[in-house]
Image (cartoon, rainbow, N blue to C red):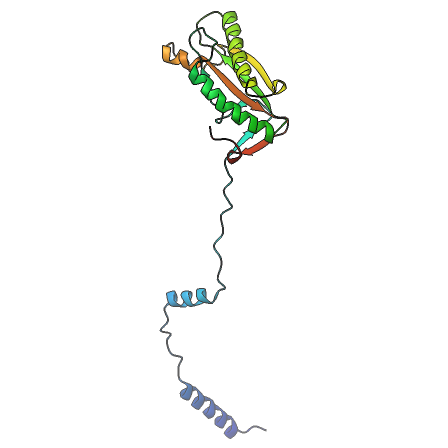
Length: 195
């Protein structure tokens, strides 16, 4: 059995152990240093990589839409003849259209004739059709297939500005080229000739 003497001896040894080990020392490591040490022990994380940027592309959807790669051409007042500047622009457009039709054979081309607000509705529809036909015929001369090209006259119905000034009217007298495809198509601009 235990005697008081053995209990006192045990208590004495316990007290002596506490005295010899002493109190724990204050840490001289600051919280910032401790956080840095823990951070350095973590496995190195690679920074998240941004997804690769998508190359700019000509997108052709199910509805006719103009494309920046196919700029509009302007016409003189009450005229449907192509001037030298328009022919140069259409020549570049024809090169782009050939590349588009090669990449997306189902694509359809629509050439549109537009007029300013002056003149009767009937006259402007007829003039717009002559302008659309002039664009179509010029494209055909560069080998664009006839079956791929449609024409339409919008007359004065789709103005690009609404002021009654010569500058505004000149902007409205135009021929535009738009595209559509049964299946949505994306053609990288790098695959198209520079316009």
